[in-house]
Length: 482
Image (cartoon, rainbow, N blue to C red; front, side, top):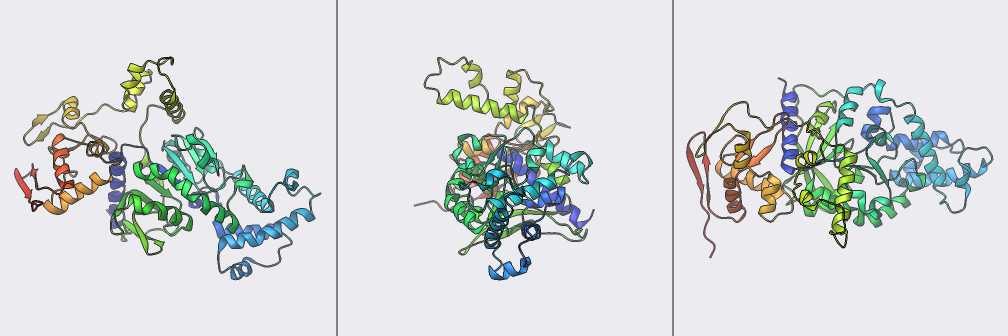
């Protein structure tokens, strides 16, 4: 096996573990790289070049505008606004732009944004999944059921792929309470379907920055509770740096710590050398002396990444979204007694498996099985799946809740600390603290013993771990607090 293949397998295994540990669906943060790969959409510089080409009254090339605006792309776009307004009005009888755009209620930038929409919609007309060069990759992408998708792209590629997801555009991401519910595509920079919402010029970005704090506040739960998977972005992307800057102090314990639930998957057009091992994490310069370290995977194809992100589900996204809305309406109601709801049954719903059985859906997930009996020191031999669940009742998110944390990241750090201090990783094997009962993908579960030892680590108390394969104990002694 090549060095790169080993790297990719190791990286994807860590990604699957993070997905399982979180106990949630991932959030996909999708950038222009996917549009370039799947239907030939240009990057930002390529889009500006095309806008200049499509306007016959612009006589200077892109380099002229870049030079005049110190290579600031939003300012370059601002320079094109006047040119497009003039072009639109000089030919207002020619039908170059929709008639309604000549209404004085629209800002003068509407002509540039309309041209962006026309151009990208034109490219998308030729997109067909069934005969796309990357059909298999796209089918795997379409099979995913993330909690939500966030994008800075304007095109309608994502709503074409994820047909069951509802689209929320621009300011509605902030104003709509249901925007962070499951099954939404959040187009935070606007959409070709609403050109007036597109963020492209310097003035647009200034207005976006003014409201960014409200957007971050709304998305903060995503960053705290869900794995965040960046696809089609470069790690130095300005838009992402601005967003990460605002959340870094909350999700990151320090510049040297990897934020375990944030992953950058970067597509490389040039073939990756089989004897090359790319980095598994990267530090992102956020400006003002701040950095954030995130997980990183370099790939030539997204196919294996999509396979690793797949989570089987007996329910469709639309059903889950409707159920979440109904439960919210029940909770906010002033009286439950007037609602036609079997409250006892609802009270017993703790996971998707319980829900699917209650409403009569066929459960597709395979029964928990083990290929062989599991021998655990101090416990004996366990073969019955029900015994395994009883002895290992908690996911890492359950450990976090019991120890007073709103999300699982501190527990993961405590497990790493145990490894650093004892050279024993309780997650690498089946033992009295942990077991992996997954079949197609990891499913890590933890015991009461794990809860006890992790509590001591977090409280900076002395503790010991039992290493079952050596039948030995390793003790870590702390100085008692005075």
